[in-house]
Length: 323
Figure 1 (cartoon, rainbow, N blue to C red):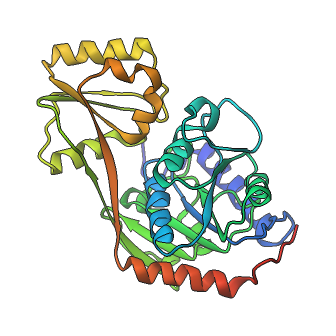
Figure 2 (cartoon, one colour; figure 1 turned 135 degrees about the vertical axis):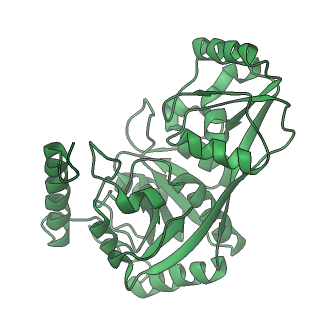
């Protein structure tokens, strides 16, 4: 296939994205504003950039400063509808795996809803947040945000638009961002990043009690990246079993994992935090199980938080709400 070939489906997708963004830019489509400021964490690609761990990391930085906040999320994969506050002891079917993980890790209000405005409105009617953190919010323009943070991976620089590629939006959409966070080997030599805050993020994993000859299984967007992180720790899997992102495990899946462990003569299992949430009641059948926790370190993190809070203070006065 010639390099110059452009799939017409990607062309159509790009035209739809551009039209929608133009309607918002010109004010034809309106963004609704919550009482408290909103900080969005998002990306321009499908899965695997680390949005949820970044939300958790930013939340920990805000908690260290005594700033009260909540997290607003779509609740991808849940079987319920409407705005609802996540119960940390709930299930992914009720709230979605990532909101559940955020609630468990941060211990702050997490509200899910197809409309993040309705989710934020529910939060403001039941508590008094100083800030809202909008999880995976870059494309959710129906809600006004006061600071937009976009995570950029190395693959994004040369990516193609959906459905042939993995980009939700073209690189030019980074012009809407206030700050761009470079993950992995992503570079800053892109014209849309001019006049933006550009921050560097270091990502890894940490584990306790790694079993010998572990079988690694997971249902995440970029499983090979997870394997690479384990190998950097000196952990060599005896075998792997991969599922689709956000996979909800059942007894049949457990049997598949156990059979793979027997084939590879594995003495235990390793999976991710998100998968541990999705295992639910079948987790006890996979022992010993070690759960890898994502670690993130933002260079000059204190300065980054100062920048966010200063920008939020400059963009609006507290207590003002527009619909």
